[in-house]
Image (tube, rainbow, N blue to C red; front, side, top):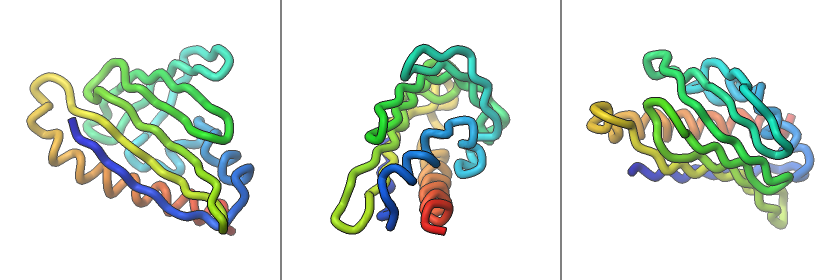
Length: 138
């Protein structure tokens, strides 16, 4: 299991940051590893969706749970990626801390490439959080 932690301090109110990150259909704009999203169902704060990732255009199923103005949990339930990605917000004295934590592994025979893919996910996550920061602060 690979674990990735990336965080960024954002000089903005929690409401403004939340407005950007909770727009899940807009995720490919910030997360370059996510090419396409197709929502399957929605029930309150839970969403089932299919995402197409940049790695060989693989499709993965996710169960997303939204905890308003706190965090978004995306559990990978089917496909090449197993595990979860949690995006959380914490108020600080001068804005907010936006943090992404991944606990993932590649399934089946692809498991041997988990380390290599982890570097790409780390880099993509750093870019995504910086893009969100820029979007919110401008």
